[in-house]
Image 1: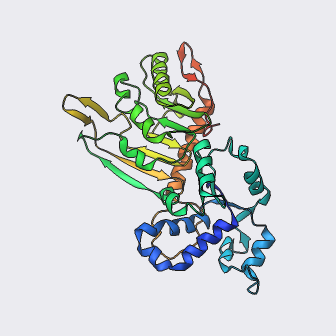
Image 2 (image 1 turned 30 degrees about the vertical axis):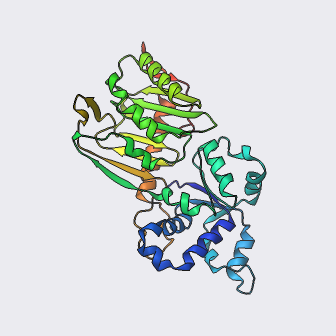
Length: 350
């Protein structure tokens, strides 16, 4: 079971422990404070935790009750006689002096001791999930937003609600057999989805891949989408489209995945159509929104015995694995039929 690679400084951990120790019962009962419990559980069993504290220091600080920096909470990082963290202080040193460290990173999560301003700048530049101790109450709650959104056939409001669940990202994959079937529906569906999930600004190139099956004139569709992206965003978006109808490489689900979130729609993402009486939805469906950090209901005694991850994490990584297989095995063409267009570059899939 894969888990998010999460860099967490010792100072940030101390801040989490101090917050939890204030009044755990209040956190468990108050939904507005649920995030601190989710964060605690996430750091202690549902991520690959990497810290700047050396192993021997963690042992001392968790065991030596006479030490001035003693904190028994650090014992939570040990389980059944083995550690549940990796110690890499030199990596944190590099982050502090070389911002270029973050260039090329994809789905790592960062909980750091840097200032709120510095963290926000790195997130905006590189599309990474990053928070400081100063920004916890503002930025952390959104990391654990999970939702199920029913959509009813008939009059609809479109895909704008996805913006409520937009996470930092520098890459995305949209996988839907019929998202490009009707060229005119792009304005009501594909373009609205893109505007809801892509960042408003980013300094690195963004990688966007669409996997689908039914496309009328791939070259023209590619050109139109590329033009929309150029007109809408000030940053560079590297677009690619893959046509799938190849047995094991075909699509069975309708998924959108970004660096930190999976969006699933039972009836697909080409649901809406503008008419004289307004926007209409063609089918009933349910949209599931799984951030990779999602842990389920944390209103229970805190435990750290879940080594297998959570349903949300399992769904995220199983979907990503399927899309990576398609990406690596999809040919450029089959006979006279073009099956891939654009640059074969996507951080999530490479």
